[in-house]
Image 1 (cartoon, helix red, strand yellow):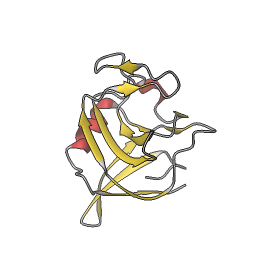
Image 2: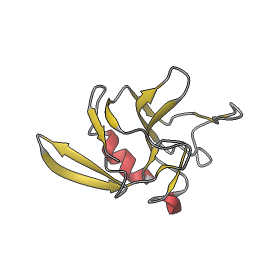
Image 3: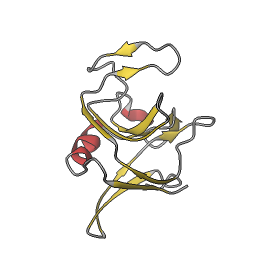
Length: 123
């Protein structure tokens, strides 16, 4: 991922096979940079509001969209790639550190990663 151009690049065997436009973390909630690995995959994830703890079930009101690819956790909070119910915000710095993709893009990407897949995030 390259935060400066707001793109996820998918490589297979060292060859770029796809790229997707993304949204990134807002000021104060910046997306972490560095080397990571996929640690969690979920279909139709439940979202927990980071401030209130409210749970939002899968569906149109869920800001995670239909897929979750987790790559960072402190044991309490998680950061990952996920869909969004606000596709008009793709390309902006608006998240709480996560990487947002259009829901159709995260569905495609989800089928091409597994637990342990390497993730490099550049500033």
